[in-house]
Structures are given as C-alpha cells and as structure tokens.
Image (cartoon, rainbow, N blue to C red; front, side, top):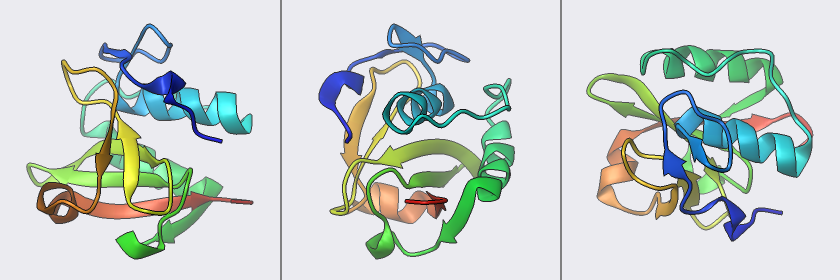
Length: 129
C-alpha cells in the first residue's frame, strides 16, 4: 500500500533514494519497496529518456489510455514541451499521483486539474496489478 513516507523527498537529478531523487528515481524506489519490483534500466541521463522509460515499462504491463481507468501503482506519463518528459505513480483510483518536480520536494497532485489532464500521455498498468 502506498504511504506518505515518500512525500517531501528532495529533488536530485538521477537520484533514487529517500534522501534525494528525480521523477523516475522516485517511481522506481516506490515500486521496489512496495511491490518488490526492480528494473534493469538505470535512471535517465536526460529528460527525453522518460519517453524511453515509458516504452521499456510496456514490457512489464499494459497501456491504460484513459485517466478514469487508472488505479493505485499505475505508472503515469506526461508530455511537457512536446515530448514525454515526466513520470509519476498513481496513489489511488481517484486521480491522485505522486511525483517529483525539478527543484521541488516529492508531492501528490491530482489528475483532475486542467494542467495535468492536458499533459497526460498514458498510463502503464504493471503485470499482476
């Protein structure tokens, strides 16, 4: 089950610990600790690699194209400035996801806002979820 334990982690590019992480590192940290999932791929070295992370994630699950069909532990990908540049993890079926924004602490946001709805690209439901 998702926990507030992952809130307010400091941002660091390429980080993947409770002390500091980036958006992909945060998702990988939670999936490892909460579901025992590990991935062979390293954190991206630039923002555009979140697009590649999304395509790699498809190996572990199926695409969820509608926001209303998302549930806890689904990966969510967002297009920012024309390409997939952000990843988060759903914390419940009511549209809330945890993520890490550059230079900000990790936080929970709502997909029910115009900002995130307009940037939502797709979700990935991991196998067995």
